[in-house]
Image (cartoon, rainbow, N blue to C red; front, side, top):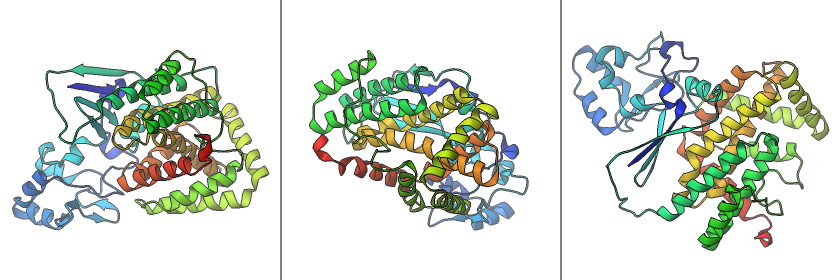
Length: 383
């Protein structure tokens, strides 16, 4: 078995009561069966409290005003205080640690939805690198596993890392290259042409791969202005499962902002926002590096999951769509409310966005479907 994790993975330490957005708020915490049985057996005064703190039918902790029933006024967990770390359910023990499972491979990451994890990722000084450890364990997935496709995806992901790491091109150019490269992989996969896929990936590794012509694989296409495209995407975001009521208000403000701005004014605001990164923010180069780190997070965490659903290009769309919307919402708050647009603000918007997307499988699946439909109903003659 191979275990892979980013170098910063081991740097994480929970800041507990100092956290600006507790992981015990704003989402339903699912309890594993072993922990549920343990909680049923608690007796005494704490046992009574536990009885009323768990939704036994759903297998989740109840919430009071959006907070876990076990969270006290100081922002600390009374279950941990009363019974110790061993009493925590699997979700609470592992979060924000996340694992993607492949045959004989486990890929570990930190969830962007955790403020401290987001800070560690976005403030990382070095380029993304990984630690790999091998053990004698072996496994075979019962339902079968396309190991050939998985190996191609791992190689393709390395190309995406390299494309994102190019210092001589802008972040917008990196987006186009990555989406076009992933589009090529998607084409070869749907044609069952693994030989062509291997050549495409090898060309990418050697820096010879060039984006195919046409706009099918791009997030933003020439026929629509950026503002118009954002309004379309905003409807998708508004239709997702809502985990934090405040997110609804934020999306409403974004819609008002886009509708009132108009195309020309919107582009002027974008230009002013970019200028502010140079004059008042971290600088354009460092800002783009932060956007790169965000894209790397999503690609590392989700890209190889395409081995299960064949949605290769959709996984890369998710990465750049997420970066785009984190920055877009930050820009809106900067323009409308005069909010800061510094690294701290980027970290905050990143974990707020991730809490709405990462904490809901339904939302991740809905976005996957949206990206798939966009690329498979647009000018299919280009295929």
